Length: 303
Image (cartoon, rainbow, N blue to C red; front, side, top):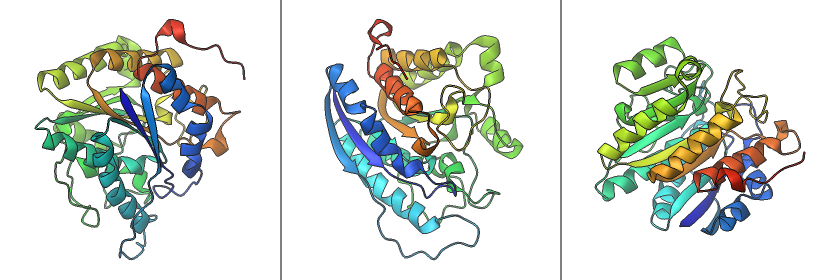
């Protein structure tokens, strides 16, 4: 497989800085070599930078012009990369998914296939610019690419992803208003309570069956805070009780076996908060599992 690595040194989605170092942390942690070792052809196209936009600063929303500029640039990067192979977007905060998902949805639409999105995250990120209390736009990408109102400053969507084509696994910090809309619009929601009771495989397989039945393509967005902070401390939005390392690898292995994944986000890694690179290394290992590394092939690591 041809894999395209695209760095997104984006820190505009929230006030706590550090995610801009994420792309280089993945490079240092050996993401490219891990994928090459699996037999893939890998091309690193460098970092995507925001385009300049003529938008004034907003009194409440943090770094609105830069977020809009990043989104516009990433829509283009995603479409170009998808024509060459399977893009892996190395972030960067989760606001980058506004551009990556919009671009991948446009790509899928040109192929005549629907795009589905698997959101592996502690948060649903379904606020709009009007509803966010923090003003941090990394909490809004799902609302944007599903076509919710309030995003007039952002690039218009050529192919919105309907909410019923979104699956969320690992939720444990969701505002009531967000959950009400997501449930009403039939998003697949699997919080950690349901995973504790029924396991992580059942909701994932049900969602993959839905993608397969629609002849869809699947974009996966993996947030560091999907994982329990005990194993992945390098994130500014830690929520206790996340996925274990074994649960996360199972998800990646099942996604690989499905053959449905067309693109991947790796987001919210803040190397400034890491412990000797352990979170970056774990995220690289998970990406390798998604791309075909078997359980017997995992390296033994010493920290």
